[in-house]
Amino acid sequence: RTTSGASSPPSHSAGTSRIVGVKYLEGAVAMFAARGGGRRMRFLVCSDDIAWCRRFFSRKEFKGHDFIFSEGNDVMTDLFLMAKCRGGHICSNSSFSFWGAYLGALDSPPGAQLTVFPSMWFGMAIKDQDGSGMYFPGSQVIENSYSLPQRLSALLHMAKTAAGNVLRRMGGR
Image 1 (spheres, rainbow, N blue to C red):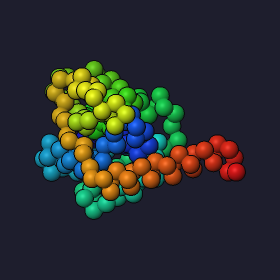
Image 2 (cartoon, one colour):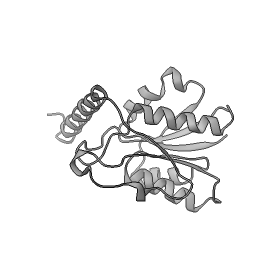
Image 3 (cartoon, rainbow, N blue to C red):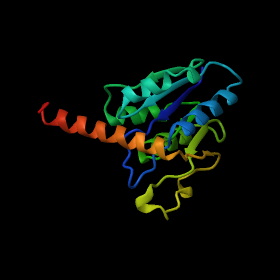
């Protein structure tokens, strides 16, 4: 079985980072499935919002695959686990997922891994910035555009997550 790392995007800042979107994640999983020749794939999911990931990856589109959710680990442990994924990586537009994929690629023969990146790394605050330098040789790039309602839904989700994190830090006040 091939294990691939997937770093999901729910809590990125809408101003500087672009949320990769549902179509990007669906396309990336489909790309791994095609490469696997229809075999059941296993994905390790690292995220700061595992609840969202559980809901998203439990959809019928993903029923033929196994998703393992990394919970309760420190950041270094998650980075180590991502780097050890031998099948490749589905990266969100974050330095965390980039480094997991990069470190994994260093430890693998050229072309042995499939690494998927979103086409856009930056949000509206720095829209003129080109992120193409983030891709390394052999990477596949998938468009990560989405509709206005999807973007508004994602922003609402981020706001709720941020508010919940603030309340938890304040001790539930």
